[in-house]
Length: 76
Image 1 (cartoon, rainbow, N blue to C red):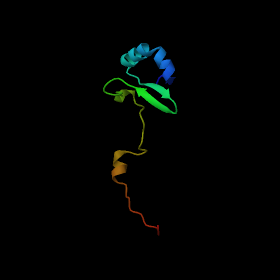
Image 2 (cartoon, one colour):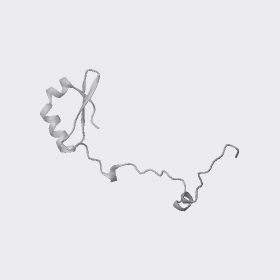
Image 3 (cartoon, one colour):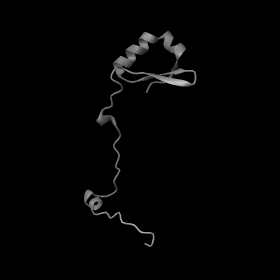
Image 4 (tube, rainbow, N blue to C red):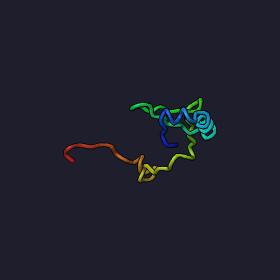
């Protein structure tokens, strides 16, 4: 994501910033006081599944997961 810019910096280069957002599809953060605005292309930001980091959430095989018992008692 591009570095956040102030509203004054945006005013100085607004057409360049708008062209970059349209070309790259990356949102441009703009700081206005204590709040941040985002300039994004119409339709929002599109993420491709291939660009997301792969995470291995399971530390077992699918068969082991199916055989898992969720029974629990405080006496165990």
